[in-house]
Amino acid sequence: MYFSFIPGRVRFRSENRNGIQQIAQATRDMPEVFETVHNERTGSLLVRFDSSAYDESTFRLLAESHLAPKSKSANRTRLIGKPEMRVIKRGMLTSLAISMIFALLDKEKWHIFLGLFFLMFLSGHLYGYRNSLLA
Image (cartoon, rainbow, N blue to C red; front, side, top):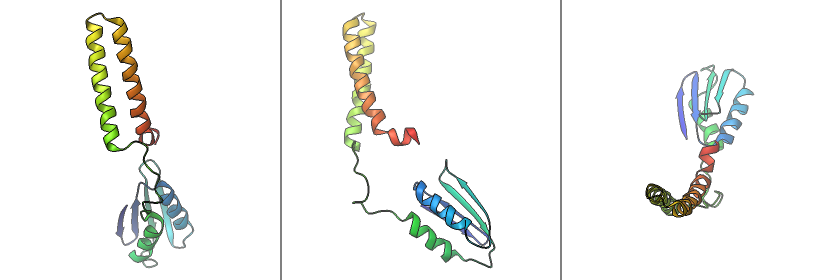
């Protein structure tokens, strides 16, 4: 979570898109708020307000209530961890390299066979990074 306060202006930035949207809605309903600029792509929210109406603690409390990290038990368990992803990446590289060698040696059956292994590792790689690829 990123929180920057200057009198009359506050910026929130977080990976928690839902929390940023909740803060954007809450600040739009506050009196003496001139403008809220929500950039969903970057997860950023800029709020301009009357500096005599609010102080830093108001917005810091808002950020902590909506953007506080959740407990580990509330997080979704990872299906593919870092050690498994390392194996997948090495498998992709190895199967691609050996497949290309067999292609150069004109061994079509082995080239196809190892190409299928590459596709298997590639599908695991895409599955592991699906959240960042589809964001």
